[in-house]
Amino acid sequence: MRIENEPKLDFKDVLIRPKRSTLSSRSEVDINHTFRFLHTGRTWTGFPLIAANMDVTGTIPMARALAGFGAMVALHKYYPPEDLIAFFREGEGARNTFYTIGTNEADWEKFALVKRQVAVPFICLDVANGYTERFVEMVAQAREQNPDSVIMAGNVVTGDMTEALLLAGADIVKVGIGPGSVCTTRKMTGVGYPQLSAVIECADAAHGLKGQVCADGGCTVPGDIAKAYGGGADFVMLGGMLAGHDECEGEIRHEERGGERVPVSMVFYGMSSDTAMNKYSGGVAKYRASEGKTVEVPYRGPVDATMQEITGGVRSMMTYIGATKLKEVPKRTTFVRVGAQLNTVFGG
Ligand SMILES: NC(=O)C1=CN([C@@H]2O[C@H](COP(=O)(O)OP(=O)(O)OC[C@H]3O[C@@H](n4cnc5c(N)ncnc54)[C@H](OP(=O)(O)O)[C@@H]3O)[C@@H](O)[C@H]2O)C=CC1
Ligand SMILES: Nc1nc2c(ncn2[C@@H]2O[C@H](COP(=O)(O)O)[C@@H](O)[C@H]2O)c(=O)[nH]1
Ligand SMILES: [K+]
Image (cartoon, rainbow, N blue to C red):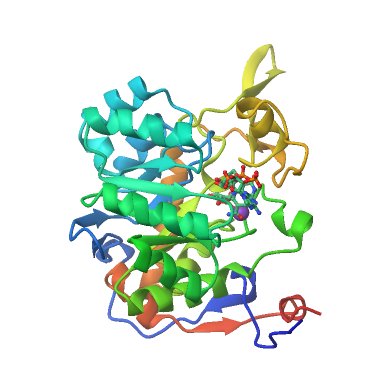
């Protein structure tokens, strides 16, 4: 056993210090970023935010809506191949969309089928635990079979494994074990890593190899997204913050109000929750436990208003620190550690 004594940070443990700036309006900043990818040489320009590949948020309507903001979606794994083929034929939306693959054979067979019909420019290889040899091999295999697709792979939380996945063939490494809004991994396993430090350390490792990272999970407000960019995240993935909208595929609960039936909430759950396992895997296997919870989030209407809040928050952060382009944000970020929360971060 060994203890690491260096402090590790979550979003709640820091604030971004304001800096002198020549900017006079939030309209003057550019929240788009152009990336050149490590293995494909392909470039992409947009607002680097990705809706999570959870079945409630990683939807085709979400992809169409977020494309209007230059943002991306990682589609969930449960669409039938016909729907995926029809969508990827469309162009615009598909330009900003990741096709998600998990570990099972059926996912790979469906992917092969779709790929014979349409180009799939972005692939998300998503597993709960990105530390297995099997996953590294899966990334290498995906790279070999898809030399022209951008591959995002994860999840991991440390620099060594970020490097391993990039060297195996990933362009973007997805970072986050246990920070999610409907995640119970930390509770069930005791495993995890404070998300802001994970992002900072993995970004440092990735950038050294000219790769990128996606901060996945734990953003609860636009300021957390701003902090993730400040910490070096190239992309930020959101589940909970994008749940509850019209573009989601979630069961909506209605209430009678003044004789009218109004939508009030939406069911949202982790992809490793009992709810998800009952829906897609015929129940929870005997040797494992659920690592996700099921909650009700408020119904919030179209996602446009939420996206405007997010982009507005990021723009405002940029004027506070004098960053004209999103790319300059980490260079201009000084985090100040705040408050009594630090006690829990040092691990007790
Ligand atoms: N970022 C995070 O912290 C987490 C994210 N998730 C999300 O939920 C989705 C579904 O997760 P889930 O069904 O649990 O697993 P995954 O879909 O990620 O992967 C399951 C495969 O990995 C093997 N495996 C080995 N060790 C683990 C482990 N510690 N946790 C999970 N799988 C393991 C499983 O085998 P076997 O079942 O035989 O052990 C199985 O073959 C993920 O794809 C991810 O999107 C889930 C948990 C954590
Ligand atoms: N440990 C678990 N993590 C999960 C589960 N389902 C999804 N996730 C992860 O959470 C993020 C989204 O986080 P949020 O804070 O923005 O809501 C998602 O991308 C996955 O990595 C789960 O069942 N267990
Ligand atoms: K999580």
